[in-house]
Each structure stands twice: as structure tokens, then as C-alpha cells.
Image 1 (cartoon, rainbow, N blue to C red):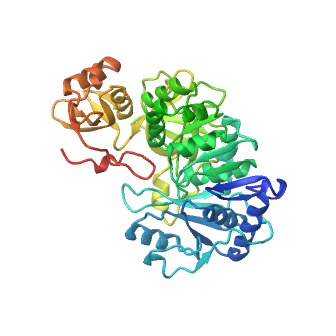
Image 2 (cartoon, one colour):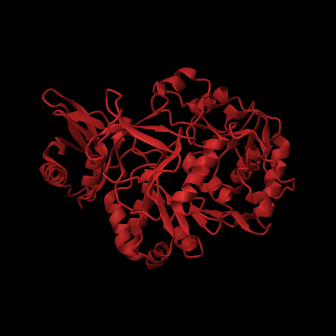
Image 3 (cartoon, one colour):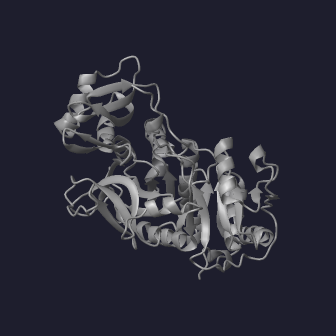
Amino acid sequence: MSSLFPALVQASADRPAVRFGERALGYGGLAAAAGAVAVRVRGARRVAVWATSELETAVAVVGVLGAGVTAVPLNPRSGERELGHILADSAPDAVLTAPGAQLPAALDGVPRIEVDVRAEGPAPEDSADDSAPALIVYTSGTTGPPKGAVLSRRAVSATLDALADAWQWTDADVLVHALPLFHVHGLVLGILGPLRRGGSVRHLGRFDTAGVARELGGGATMLFGVPTMYHRIAEALPGDPALVKALAGARLLVSGSAALPVHDHERIAAATGRRVIERYGMTETLMNTSVRADGEARPGTVGVPLPGVELRLAGDDGVSVAAFDGESVGEIQLRGPNLFTEYLNRPDATADAFTADGWFRTGDMAVRDPDGYVRIVGRKATDLIKSGGYKIGAGEIENALLEHPGVREAAVTGEPDPDLGERIVAWIVPADPGAPPADEELADYVARRLAPHKRPRVIRRLDALPRNDMGKILKRALPDG
């Protein structure tokens, strides 16, 4: 039994904790406001949080966790059917919101508690057992209704402490980001992470490069983002010397939630002298691997397993892929204290997610380099292409395509082929729609960089690729043919 946020009682009251735009709380104010929330929810089983990008969301989650209650963050952009499913599945005793927030009809029957960030309450006791559930975070539901991943307090603390080791994260760090707060990246890493360290976080509300430049230029030391954000940064750097200077002075630039294209890595490094590091996690596992702050920031990799995390690659037959040769593809399987406890109300799905010997099946395919660095090549269901007897990861082909100056966005899928089994299909958004690169030019470009059997056999052009809120490409939403 240990406190998730010891700084709430140990840090000086005026030490900065959280800031959203012009609204901010020091550790004293956060402890008081979260304590007032804790008093109101204590004794509840689960409490939903209407997770807007506002100060109230941070206060609400810290207060719920401080009361030893389970928080269920709700995506304000969820559709009626999805939100109805989540509420029926999690059965929250109340929903916490910012004052005056407009809620959809699906929440009409749930008691509402408005969060007052200036309220005065006793510091949260934060005395729940480490095995108790801290959060229920719902998956994206790409293969059915979203499943609620139950994350224990131990899982949250283990992940944040492992990242502190990997990133040399201390109470002196000031994090800036603009990530949504209903997701692991923005909420657990981006809000709870700084507070566990005793540092501070500045949330931009909405992402823009001017905000990044302002905050990193004004004392922030770390930036968290997704590839879409870093792409916009890379595009803006040539004409924005203030942004160049701000990124050059940052201690750590971290990208996650999807692979950052190599060409964006290189453009940022060339302009600022700083390399973006990547990490790998999932809702069910929190964080698994990362490039270390004192390690090599190698584009295209997600680094090495975090302290306490066991990682293996498994072949189709379930046997571990022993080779660290940068070529042998296997499914990432995991064990460690960072893993979720169960899918809420889904014992069947929970059992199916684990092997007989207790390893979690991620569905992500990867290779390992000789020094242990992990390179993810795609999802088993959508990104592993079996063509001409080869197992090919879509991710490396996408990266190769993105290095071509005529390609702005790229996605790669497989489709049935009577000769090859599957043929490689590249979906591209041209940099200049009026003069897109020729099919043969792109296919040869990939073949020269990777291997002949990895060349796309079909090229399809789109105005934009479908993406979710975190910037991940939705391959299932690509048009037929």
C-alpha cells in the first residue's frame, strides 16, 4: 500500500502542479481541490469523469484515486451507442464534470458532481491497496464494442516509475502537451506522471506549434506528442526560429501512440539538434518499452523493455523467436506489473488475451535488433502481410514511402493475390496532388531501400488517410479497392 502522489502532502503548497492555459493550481491548491472531490466520492465503487482537456479533469481524477475509488474516463467525443455501452458496462455511481458542462442524454440517469477547482478539502488519504483498480480505460473497439481494461494502482505506479528510470524524469521537469485526457497517453503519462514525480504539467488545451514554442521557451523541459503533432512541428520549423530554439533547449521530446515516420525524425533533428525518442505501450499494458534518455535515439525503433517488463516475440506456432537479428518477425508478448488485471465483465476475452503460460498477446508484430532494440512492423491482424512466402511488416514499407519527397502520408495493407498469397497495397496522399509520383517510381523506391519482395504491387491515392483522435491510421476505414 503506497501513495500514488506523495507530493500532494510533501511538496510546498505553492510549487506549480498543473496548468491549463491561464488556469493553474499549485500542489497546495491541487491537494485541497482533489481532497474536496475525494470527500464527495468516497465509498463509491466507480466514478466516471467527463474527460475534457480542462483543469477540472485533472482535479477529478486525482481526487477519485485519492479516495481509493476507480475512475472511468469518458471520451467527450464518443458517439451515443459507444457511450451507452461504456456506461452500461461500467455502471458508474456518478459522473464528475466541469461546471456547466453540456452532457449527452446517455448520462441523464447518472448523478452529476461538478468539480470546483477552488474548493478546500483535506488532502486525499490515498490509502487503497496496490492491487485495487485505479482506472478502467476503454479500448478503441475496432473489432467490436469497446472493452474496459481494468488498470490497478500497481500498474500505474510501476509504469510511471519505470519511465522515470528510463527518461531520468524528476521533480525538476516541466512537461508540456496537448493530448486528450480520456486516454492512457494523455492522462496516465501526461497528467499522473508529472504529479507522481512532484513536477508540473502545462496542458495546451489544443495543439499548436506556437504554444509548444511558448512553453518550451518558457521553462518547460519535456514535450509529449503523437506523430501528427510532430509532423506539424517538422513542417513549421523552417519558418519559425522561435520553435527551433525552443525544441533545441528541451531536455526530452517523446512521441507515442503510433510510429513516427523516419523523415519527420530527421527533419526535426536536422533543424534542432534534438532527436525525438519513441516508446511503446497499449491500454492493456500501459508502457512496455522506450528509448532511454541516456541511450541512442534510433529512428524507427521503440527502444528496449522498461525495468520490470518481460518481452518475447512469438511465431505463428507460439514458439518464442529467439533471434535478435533485425529480421525475424514475431508477435510481442508481455509479462510484468504494468499489465491490466482483466477486461471488465469479459472473462472470456481476458482468458483469450493471455497464453497458457501467462503472457499477454499484444497483436503487435516486431523484430529485435542484435542490441535488443525493438522495431514494430505492424499489427498482426492488419499489418502483417504474407507475400510470396515472406512475412512483411507494413510499417517499414510505410516509412520507406514517407521518405519519398512526393509522399505526404502513407498506409500499407495486403489484399488477396492468386500467385503471391497477398500483394502489397500502398495508399498514399501525394505532397502535390497535381503531380503525384508514378506508381513504378514509388515501387522501385521501396525496393531499393528495403528489398524487392517488399515493393508495393498496387498504389492507390487519397486526399487524406482516415485517423482516430490519437493520430493512428484507421486501416479498416480505407475504401474498398
